[in-house]
Amino acid sequence: MKIILGVCGGIAAYKAAELLREFQRRGAIVQVVMTANAERFVTPLTFAALSGSQVMTSLWQPVSTDSEQSFDIEHIQVTQDADVLVVAPATANMLAKMAHGFADDVLSATALAATIPIVVAPAMNLHMWEHPATQENLEILRQRGVRVVSPESGELACGMVGAGRLADPSVIADHVFATAKHAQDLVGETILITAGGTREPIDPVRFIGNRSSGKMGVALVEAALERGAKVILVGASLAVPAPAQCESIRVTTAGEMETVVLERLPEASMVIMAAAVSDYRLMHPASEKLKKKSSLTLELEPTRDILRQVAEQRRAGTIVIGFAAETENVLEEGRRKLRAKGVDLIVANDVSRAGSGFEADMNEGILISHDEEQVMPRSSKRELADRILTWARSAIRARER
Ligand code: CTP
Image 1: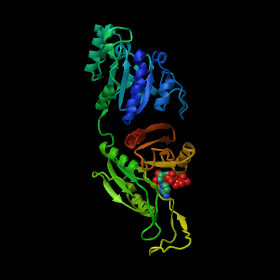
Image 2: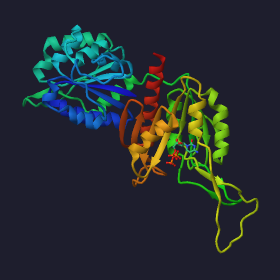
Image 3: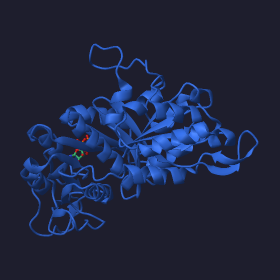
């Protein structure tokens, strides 16, 4: 889910930071748009740091594009990739602008250009809220399908008591998700997902393996299914059950995974290699159980890189996503793998951190593509899965354009 969060200039602007975090906790990617007055209450830096992306503060923001243009029509572009626009806090002034089609600042222009669902969460002084002008503007907006999250009653910043306080972040988030829960945004996509850790036999009872539990891959499968995709799961050793609604193919070794993945690749519009694939296998696995000796030397040979082959052999338009599990230089290694493997996105994470990465329920990392890098704060693997799929869905849409 990609949410545009429009922040207006009111005391409640600081609460938009908490709202942003709430959206992220629920797995959304957030792009913040601020009015000039909002900047008087909270700096764009706060929202940039929390959201991991640049905040839109002006209609005339120079952006770096690979075209010759020095300005991009960002306020139009941004709504095309998003699922919902929420204005919180929405001031009386912004509601008036939105109701009457003004577009003289970055947020009202974004709202006017938006063809996606819009939610407004007003916050203002009691008299401004009750003023017929505000109420009539809200009515106009409601009739146009804008969802209004009414303010709560309580003590207001101006010292008065009454309606005007910004609704609770979780209440606003419920409305936003209910409005945007469009649907299933991956209907028609076939996603090939690998998960778990491969095992390379040493002899009939022993193997070389790794600590991958398959939780991240399975979280991706669940999220993709919920969003309407058809999923082919190629699972190596998994510590969690595979969801029943996907086609689940079990493999053991890197070689088996390679065969299945390349065989099924033509069907896929997206491939996500979340599996931890062994980089080496035994040159000569023993056919009988090895007996204990004073020392043992295993001769290994490299396995072939499945992800690289997928990137090379994919049909045009197939999105390819890989993971980079690192213990040092996470960003640099992620960038290197993005280029070296020829993929569209690398999800780079630091597996040395306690409580995230292998076997854990939480994860954190950086989404690295060819034109952006998004820091993903520590969150559940399911939230992360949704962020990855939201990125992928945007990439598909961008290709279609
Ligand atoms: N991968 C793969 N085939 C392999 C090894 C890895 O498809 N034989 C995929 C993984 O599923 C993951 C990505 O490549 O999506 C990165 O895996 P990683 O082990 O981090 O990268 P390597 O290329 O093995 O690099 P290194 O071990 O040097 O860090």
